[in-house]
Image (cartoon, rainbow, N blue to C red):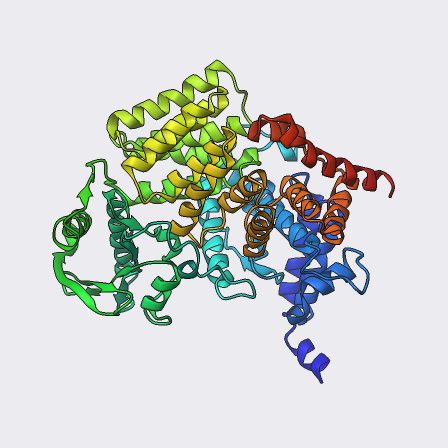
Length: 588
């Protein structure tokens, strides 16, 4: 009976033919870098889904049917399926940034699931591909024109948003921040700005509601004595399906700001209130009415008034450092966010090329604002840091120029300050990097980015124990974001501080959440298990790592470690684990 029901769910023959054709097109492309094993992985999950057996796509079935694991395979202790899925997702993203940018079908694998998603695109009405070309010499040599990269990035980020929504509430839920590290902020109020509920079905009101919430979060992040949860961790919550007060408590907030936006005949009405999480009582509320034509300017004023209220009326001991360097165009802000999201993971040159084009557009849209230059410096410093651009004086001069232009326009710009911190790392001056990280936090004390990078700078400066606290604070301010490697960095810091159990737990949490992961983190897992005498767990990690090495997926571990730690004695246990994995690979 189950088999018959599954067969009834199969997709129509025309769609199945299109999906098969897309797989053939992808497998023929030199830009689709998946090896034979990951191609078999993709083919298997696609075929199973088309046959109506998507509910059977679990780590165990993929490990046994595709990856050659025995019937006693344990997907919880051996991460090979999740690691292969993560690499496959990155390879799909790269393909659709390059050769697949004009394909009629986009195949993705949402995080938290192994069931593929298929999105058919109508490209018949779009501009001709030839109109944007400047030349093509072979399939792998062509680069998409800027307009196409913009469209594709919007699509990829929309898919990412859906994936993040699906990941919440899956079999690996995020940690309840209210039960961990409750002393990180002492008695400081911690605020979560929840999405404002747009009343009615107007797409315009939905955009306006999100814009106000983002602006308020940005302004409150610079209030001294207040801590604000990143909007990236609250944006996917909605007033209709969840208890926002409970969600705020899970995020570690002491207060939540919630409200609704109603479309009127010629404008909007925003009702907003501040709620104490413990008592569930509303301690402040206000209504704002404004005209449609003045929407953007009025949003700025509303954000300012709410921020000032926090600083003066609700918490009079707080001080505000809100600057005038604000966004004036929402389209520029969207492009900026897309550009800085797309550089993660920072190992693909195509990502940086796309981000650079987007950020140049931001500069042209807002030439008097700091954001575009700060983003360009930040992205280019990462390009050099990951070896995708030469670490030369010329490169560093360009990075510094962008950062200094941004700081002239806004002395408190966090990304510009962190860019100078990255520059310190590129120049072998980690203590200078630490100083810039500390300055960034002084200017924006609720920036999860600033706390995360300060932790990274401290780690690279040989101070792993000191790095742990800012990294924990970064995660408490943005607990649901998974694209940035803060959990990995904290796991590394915990390992070098001798907290092996904590390190393993942190690295596993990152892996379960679908965060960035690779061979360098597997080496830390193996070394952590070895330090605790957990030899079976160490062997399982080394087995998975040896398979990657046998397939040609080597990693310049020593060169990477030399960037992270300066003491050769600290490096040796990790190099030993990597050599063990290489020996296993050679014995295959």
